[in-house]
Length: 540
Image 1 (cartoon, rainbow, N blue to C red):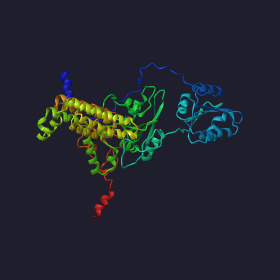
Image 2 (cartoon, helix red, strand yellow):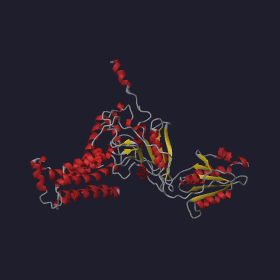
Image 3 (spheres, rainbow, N blue to C red):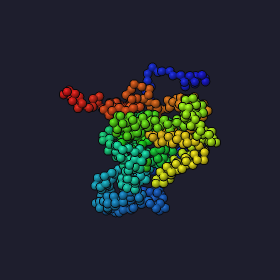
Image 4 (cartoon, rainbow, N blue to C red):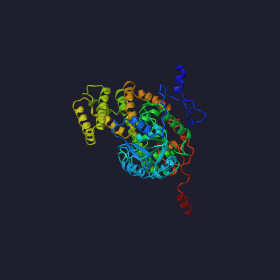
């Protein structure tokens, strides 16, 4: 048995056909194993008193101070009332478009009340009807105003949301000199509008989702019909629908709920605050999830290469984008392996160091009382403490703390002969490299892996680092993100998708969408998109 496991892990057996995009299909299965109370469904009654007492009881009136239930006497002595939450609606809309219009509505017959209110009374653009009191309560909680009319067995719901929110600002964590300078906010409809402003097509579908049995957090799943793989869309929707939990507040919680393996140290879903990046992902055939109250969106599926990309690559010409990507990859490599390489060289492989440099390192470490491993861990932990403190401090103080604290701490440590100057240089380069990591979550991955590589190098030198790289590569090869192998498209080395994953293609050479997504429409632009170039050559 052990022999088979080792053979499967370390012996490569090529497949006759490349691995395809595959999502397992499931029937409608209830995954919640908790015992849930069956709640009896409640519906709108034609009785004014029944509806009024039910809404007062459900919303704990008068104990709830911000719940408004306003009674209205219509012409003909027909009674009605509206329910809304103060602070979540635009009161002027309720006053002018609902209450005032309702009081001015002429006398209507008993059997024509519903039709008359729908056709003659409605002066607000968005109105719908429902007789399910749970749906009505959800809409009220989300900022709608509900109207109950005596003799009508349905309530009228008006979208009059108007709560305070943050305006659209610049991206904080994904800054770019080129491209749009807009970031997602906490408003769901604002975020969907930002995406639709870029992807101007009626084929863009915003599929409604709701997560949390109590929080009832609303969101949308965006995809382009005719481009995205239908199996991918149904799989993402299935995972979201089968989240059985009371509260889901943020998009980060949703990410952990729907990830294939949420406890792994490597992120499997891209989180972005840029609408242009989300829009570009949609055009490639991916899905984008947005939740109300979260200023970020999820792009799925993703792979290891896309986590290393930044949005500014798309706005630069090929030479500049390639240079930027190579510098970024170098910084990520240094942040991950430089401390481990330094430790392995100084402890096990002295022969590869030039003689004068070896003398210099030995002289610098002559008065340091700690072994290299302890010295490295002390400085690495100190740097992480400064970074965490800088994040938690107010912005003007945080940047000052990071610079001054690092200088003072490093100089004091060298003067006290606790660490050597060369160690300060190693930690500084490692820290600078970590800031060049494209994805913030991936930066956390490298911080954890860096410690693992340090311990492997301390006990086995280069051999330990090699073993760690092999094990981590096997670990990445075993991961899938919504049916897509995490190391795609490395299975097809000569594929155009692999070229763009590592380097860059010109904007006029991106004829096909990534093949590992198995999109319905594989062509994103014709083979010859620069037609003026051909005409110029013909004239010559």
